[in-house]
Length: 97
Image (cartoon, rainbow, N blue to C red):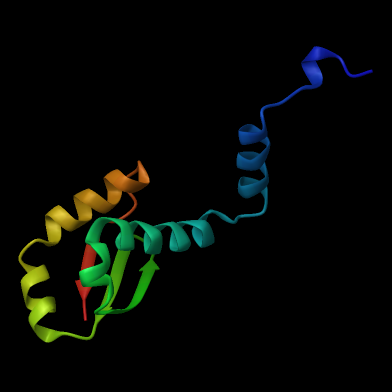
């Protein structure tokens, strides 16, 4: 019979597993793609070819040069919204290609 002290929250066990196996970078890459789709919506996601996170820089490859130019004016707001969606300051720089 397990003692009460032996019980751990599943969230704590998962955090420990991710930390020990150095999986956070991979999870961040998946999470940032999901956040991009959620924040930017289907209209912009339709023109998004690739989303890549490398260290603290997010690279977005777009198929529309007009959209790329329009989004370049709001880079700071996009970075802020993505970081808010992920509940941490992960992205420092945004590169639109």
